[in-house]
Length: 445
Image (tube, rainbow, N blue to C red; front, side, top):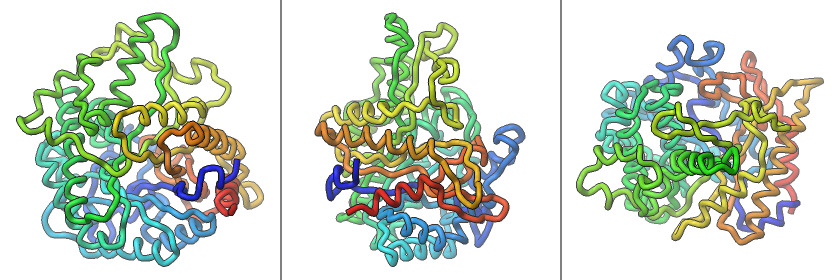
């Protein structure tokens, strides 16, 4: 397997997110985000970690972009911190925040690195959460105002835009299970948050196309290949219900298919939050879709899980041969299966793998990080992406998650996904063997 096997137009990159990397949590006029608040709540983050400094990308971005260049990575996906732009969520913008992203974009372009911008990667301003956050339909106008501010400053230099990062995760984990910010629970919070997120993708997509007619607009979805735990009909049915929630809930309304309520009756409650014109507003013709895959899930029927009557069987309980630091099974075929699943939708736009990567317990030894398990993971998953491409499936690029070790949400700093090791005490960077391998792979003509 060499880079040329994927074709000259295949896009290669690396992804990151503002809250997980930037630090500078209250510097230069930045407001608080829901994650700044959530990390202060006792018991919510492993080891009581926080992201006040993270990997200090706010101050060290020239160094990190130099590493991207060193690894021959042509595309850099990053997100913008909403409360860094609008400290109060709406109203007066923070000029220093806007200046930071202008410098970042300009520095990318100076180094011939193409910026791919994600508008919302989970860091909602805390002031807006106090008004209901994603459960409040006004979030659509708040997001529109924020987007307009960004477009007015860097729209002339950025060609690739993504509206939301993984709406399934931030609505379910944040507004149903309460394990992510803002820590809300229950269907009465999840349903409006999910519906407003679905509407936001089309609304902001239309705004971007209107203001920037020549740009490419996408959005990203988390996905996991779902396998039944057995051949029994009840496990097969449970897997189908889990697939609705994990993989289908947001992509199908975007494609004009409506919510997949017929296959998961518990979703009927979302209709309560739909207004007369919403069915027309949900679909949007994106230029591309980002799919983000790390593993598969094995599902069995459970009488005791409300609404979905299904539960995941953890990888360790299944005694699979390879498990990551996150407790996820290493199952490379999952990425092929998800490319195929999304490719099979009618009228699906171009697909990019906008996140794929893994966390293992990396250690610096004699000045280097021999993360051979990550190298093998990336090679095995890229082999499956190549298989998909050779089978004529609709995949046009691959971005590794992530550039540097960072703040991994509820896992704090315990889960290291980076191609670059970060000592969070000194902020020293060391390119891991995986980063060296990826760089050598991309350097091939």
